[in-house]
Image (cartoon, rainbow, N blue to C red; front, top):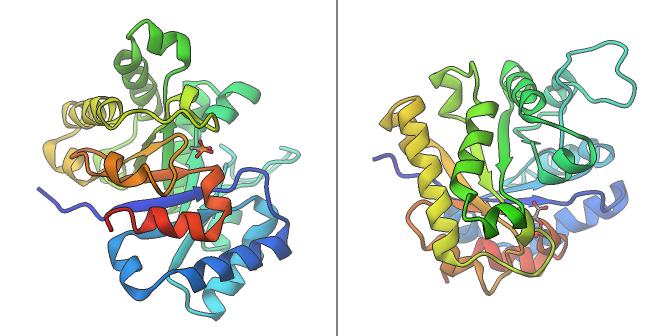
Amino acid sequence: MTKRQPLIAGNWKMNNNHFEAIALVQKLAFALKDKDYDNAEVVVLPPFTDLRSVQTLVDGDKLRIGFGAQDISAHDKGAYTGEISGPMLAKLECSYVLVGHSERREYHNEDDAVVNSKVKAAFKHGIAPILCVGEGLEVRKAGQQVEHVLSQLDGALKEIPAEQAEKIVIAYEPVWAIGTGEVATPEDAQEVCAAIRVRLAELYSSEVSGAVRVLYGGSVKGDNAGDIMAKDDVDGALVGGASLKADEFAKIIRFNE
Ligand code: PEP
């Protein structure tokens, strides 16, 4: 099976102006040692208004920190006030984009069809989507988390060919764990991440399923990251709140120490 490089991605959400973004990336670079970059791929996902500043800093200082955006328009250009397109993000050298985060599904009514169109837009412009899936509390209480997540996965991957699918990153983020301090148990995370991998093998092949990185997200901190990422099918973390503190984020990146 392909060895998957762990990925630790920081979703800054709507935090940090472009000056604060530069300071945070500098602090993170200062907190990280060379061997930390061998441990995991490090990515930050700042707000759109910070991307140019982060790109200039990363490029100028040759930092080994990747970056991407938190959303992408399904359209390439035109009368879509307020939206940011794939060509714009590609021009800024974004490597990744979040698609289908639960906050976009909930506050911006993004359904599986919208998520699917954004996955397509990202791939069209050479940007790897970090596709977020996850169940709410009611679904979890009913024990339907696997079915729920697999149905989101099927919807998001509609008409996505294998050569693109193998480059996707999937983040399993139970909605009840996001920003609540209530982290899933390593076993809960493994159950759903493993089911995602099985479904990828069914939809595509064992090569694709073995290549795709499946992350866990939801109240990940320095002191719980190691246990979750020790699970076979968890290949990293999507981190919200804790990615805003350079030292805490660095601790997550050193999850296996
Ligand atoms: C997120 O927003 O993707 C997230 C996982 O947030 P937090 O780490 O704060 O729970």
